[in-house]
Structures are given as structure tokens and as C-alpha cells.
Length: 97
Image 1 (cartoon, rainbow, N blue to C red):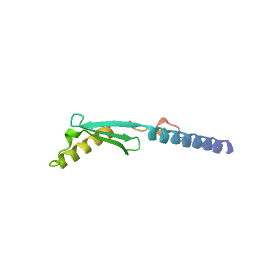
Image 2 (cartoon, rainbow, N blue to C red):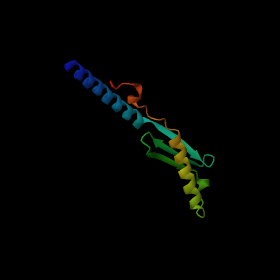
Image 3 (cartoon, rainbow, N blue to C red):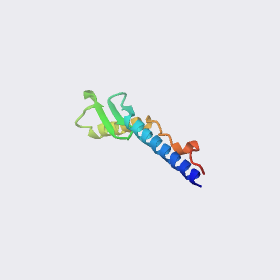
Image 4 (cartoon, one colour):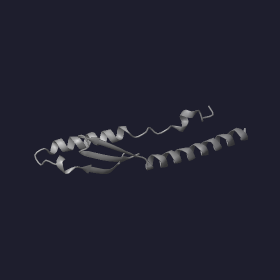
């Protein structure tokens, strides 16, 4: 009985280590999205946080602020769609059940 429990503890520690590595990998990933033919560019992290927004001057029109807002949102959505899906360590059949 003791060896089964120790094997499960070892597997749990391995899974924790893998999850830590996955979190670290996600944190270091970035993706870039664009809208308006490159007028607006958004860079996001793997944690889905905006890291950088670039707006070309010719895109700025004081009478069309809503258009600029739409471009920013579209570039953000584009960047998010380019982030890879994190891998689930449980999907690999690591659980002993």
C-alpha cells in the first residue's frame, strides 16, 4: 500500500513541475495582431495582457474616435487568436486512474 501512495505523490510532484513550466512558457509567449491593414498593431502576452499598442498617425482622426476604437479591438482579437493553446498535462494520461 505504501508504494502505491509514494508513486502517486511522485506523479503529483511531476505534474506540479509540469504545470509550473507551462505557466512559465505561457508568460513568455507573445502574439501580434493587426487591423486596418496594419494601421493598428497590438502585442499581447500569453497571459492575454496587452503589452504594446501601435497606432499609425494617419489612422488618428478626431472626428472618428469610434473607428479607432474598433480597430484597436479588432487588432486585440487578432492577437489573441494567434496565441497557442496551453497544453493540458492531464490530457496525456498521466493520472493513475
